[in-house]
Length: 92
Image 1 (cartoon, rainbow, N blue to C red):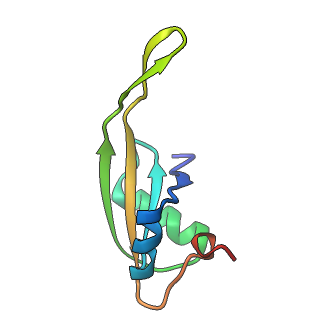
Image 2: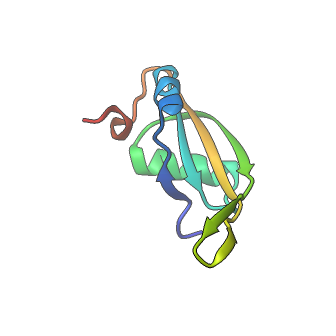
C-alpha cells in the first residue's frame, strides 16, 4: 500500500485530545490498523500504543451544478506510548 496516511486532522477537539497522546489522521479506506501503526511509527519515529479506526459517512454537498456527494472516508485515532509526542501537532 503506497499511501496509508493522507493528512493529519487538526481541529480544536483533536488538539485537546493531543494532550492525552491521541492524534487523528485521515487514512486510506483499505488500510488496516497494523498498516496505520507501521506508517505512523515509520513516519514520525514514535511508538504507537493503540489504533482506533472509523469510517466517516459521506455527505451531500451543494454545488452550482446541483447536489454532489462527498465520498466516505476513514479516520484513525492513534494513541502513542507515554512520553512520545508528534511535533507536527505541536506547531514547532
